[in-house]
Length: 409
Image (tube, helix red, strand yellow):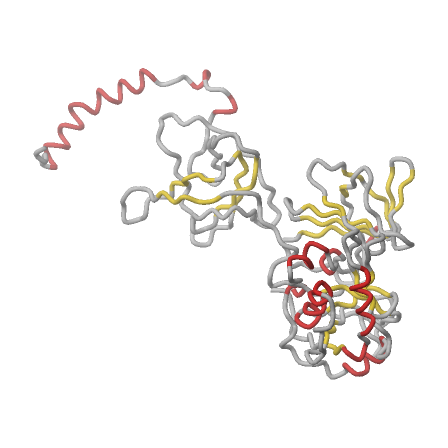
């Protein structure tokens, strides 16, 4: 087709066809009074843009980063709350185009029905050209037990031995044997897997000034640790949340506990200085448990939890003490590791997974109790004889790690 000159094309548009098109559009416009309230003002391309109807799968969170990519994880600005998006009806069958994001924009969350694969239209580049169509995978929100750069998840096999290692090992018990404080008959600290549908309760606390108010999800028949500590742990990996209670009890339909803490598993934040949690050290318990699924997967990629009979003070990442600081007893938060020279080849395969983790990630002192007791979740599938063999190891097989430079992030 011959190309019209710029001046001729301009005259043709302004004096010819364009006014007719505009008049036709005005005549066919839908009056505002006929637009359903939940369909009005879709705000396409704005920070409050709503999610398109993508096929009726369940609602999940979709995070759009400042680069325009969507990664399937949830990220919100500090203090913000994910908002349930409505589903606007576009005036034309044109694809929706996401809002251009500023280079320093805070990631935002769009909640809506999302299928497993959907093409997202990216903004037109400043230099022009058609929108870029990028197929992405969107599925359930991926969640880990704290970020990869959290101290629980950082290896310590390359860190130096602490200058007071000998003193601390002696104080805990150089000749005392190691004990796996979990088994197949119910000993250990169990945990409950919960969902958004699990009933929640307000819990009254003995130490309310250092406890998170909740509410706490508690199943109808929750798993609770045997004994006076009576820990009740609930984890929801779809929402990346962990709720922990200490010395929990129920009277009628009401729940009470000594203390309680709620953890965001996406966050590196510690408890406030001086605060306890459901653990004496102010730490999360679930993060340090030996769990059957991890052991049988072949590796544990985090530090473990252990106890000692006497402690004083606390060091990072702990936030709480049970006795005033001193120099001759271990502080809460102390990190020890199994010496690299210890031969673990004679132990059973599952025990070797635990011992390998103790060499690479070590374990964190989190409570007062029997020395060198390693915490884990009970499971009927454990081979108790295999883990009883850990008693062949003693305090002398461990060393204290210098964690003075080890921090979250």
